[in-house]
Amino acid sequence: MKLPAPPSEKSFPSALHHPRVATAIGRWLAAMVVICFLTGLFSHFQQDTPSWLHIPSHPASLYRVTQGLHVLSGTVAVPLLLAKLWTVYPKLFAKPPWPPSREALATIVERLSILVLVSAMALELFIGFINTLQWYPWPFPFRQTHYALAWIIVGALLVHIAVKLPLIRANWRRPPEPTPESLPPAITGLTRRGLFRTVAGAATLVGITSVGQSAPILGSVAVLAPRKPNIGPQGLPVNRTADAAGVTGIDADWRFTVVGPKQLSLSLAELQQLPQSRSALPIACVEGWSQGGRWDGVRIRDLLELCGASAHSRVRVVSMEKGGFYATSELPEQFAADPLTLLALRLNGSELALDHGFPARIIAPNRPGVLQTKWVHRLEVIA
Ligand SMILES: Nc1nc2c(c(=O)[nH]1)N[C@H]1C(S)=C(S)[C@@H](COP(=O)(O)O)O[C@H]1N2
Ligand SMILES: [Mo]
Image (cartoon, rainbow, N blue to C red; front, top):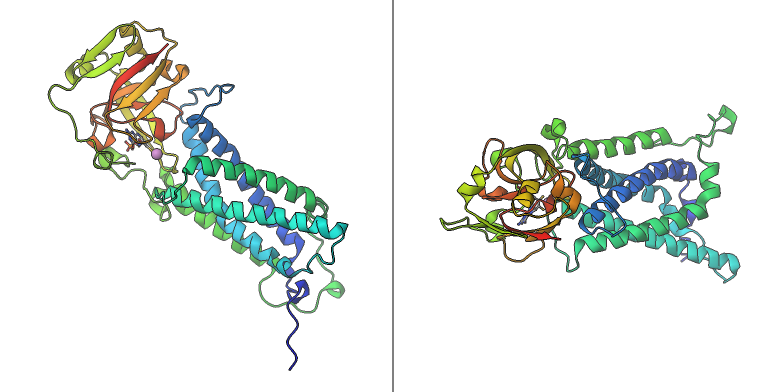
């Protein structure tokens, strides 16, 4: 009995596997990768600032926009990546680079770079998406891994684009409409335009049903969004509840401490009697949801002045929460000095809910949610 011949690249004659399709979808995917990479760098550097970088405290909603775009472009990249892989998968059946020769070696290197690119990207998008669901089942630290994978992707992508450049250039423009004689034997099924529309439709649908977590206008159709921006106590979602953080509230002898040139020790009533300021600022979580709020409280720079510290001080923020990544944070000089940065005591017109950080929390402009520390009981001035 004769075995059927193994499939080869030629076994997939559909025009949808043409390099023109790979180029067109690849461009969209590349655009998403660029947006995702740049906004991701910004988010990473907010939390791990290199000494050469100065992050401004304005525009106040910048981080809300960049992180919204980060999660949006990553989400939209998923259907684009799937479509791109489907378009090129017949390449898996291409002739193996054998016997060894110089060309064969080049092919092996190229295929390895694609293997690295595809696996890094699939893993990156997968762990990123799982993270937007606030689920961290990994034994490795999420942010550092996500960051390292991003550089691997960018490196492998540059190699991939360099290798494919002649093919990309040849297929950059739409080919001229075929004349009747040049038409291939009747193709049935999806046309190229049909495929493009399907992919664009899927990407748009995924985008529209998730962007509502940071753009309240689309909140009502945000069925893919794990959080709706206006659902939660005081009209704001809660990222980690007091219960989950092991914080139970305060008793009558609770004191708020500021450690500086002079040491301050204030009761909640005394904090409430200090001059209060109002800031309209969003909580913009790294996980992609964001929502604005009206916060009332004491300006950090007023507290710096009260304790006799220079207006150009860095401030370490300490939560009543014991341990964990979020229990402390640091306000760099420009954030501590910004008139919008508050030790907030009230949200949207009423006293902070325990889940939002009662009795006091940090709210600062242009910062990721992870740094808006809740349940604050101590500030330490760093000269
Ligand atoms: N002490 C402490 N502060 C914290 C957190 C936390 O877990 N513990 N979560 C942070 C994160 S990740 C976000 S997005 C915001 C969310 O604030 P909210 O729960 O009031 O909306 O609080 C931040 N402050
Ligand atoms: Mo967050």
